[in-house]
Each structure stands twice: as C-alpha cells, then as structure tokens.
Image (tube, rainbow, N blue to C red; front, top):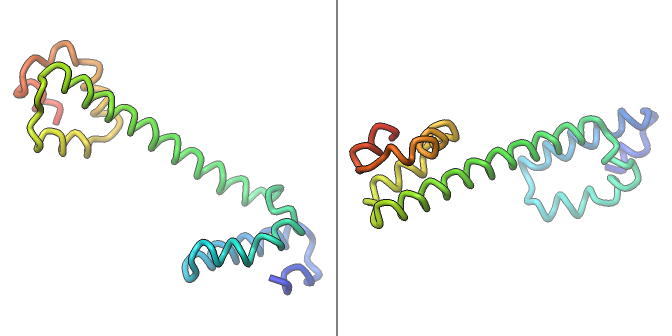
Length: 124
C-alpha cells in the first residue's frame, strides 16, 4: 500500500490501484485484516471520492435495497396467508421463501382470490 502512495501516478490512478488491491485482498484475507491495512491509506487518498469506489458502493446499495424489498414482500405474503389460512404446511412456506419478487407480487395482488391452498399452488 505504501508503494501505491509513493508511485508517480496521479491521485485518481492511485485510488484505482488501491481499490483493485482491496478487492483482490478480499479474496485472500478476512475483513478485519483488510480494514486494518487499508484504513490509513484510504484516508490519505480520499478513496471515497473515487468513481470506482462510488460505483461499487452504489451497486452494493442497489443489491441491498432489492434484497430488502424481496424480504419485505416475502414476510407480507407469509403473514397474510397465515392470517387467511391459520396454518400453512411447511412445504408451502419453503416454496414461498424461494419465490422471486415477481411471483411474490402476484400472490399479494391476488390474495383475495386465493381461497384454498390449491388456489395458492397456482402461484407456486
């Protein structure tokens, strides 16, 4: 890392090099080791200003939000179905937990038309 700081590259090239080094280090070292080794250099190069860093951060945020939406949908579907049927067989619950956002949305949209477990099977 000190080598990156001392090289004659411009600041953006140094940031990119550091970002790549941190990504590759993640393949070999545990998170605490990486954080300890990169924290000081990141401050010196102000890595948060790097376009690559922002891109990775934003991509992670998008994935996290998508996962959160899907989990919220899943919880809502299960809660409403439990309320409607009182007891849902384990295989149905397992299948619902594996559904994607689109399929979960269809169940929510049609919850009033789903009156039996066999009706529910059409969405699973």
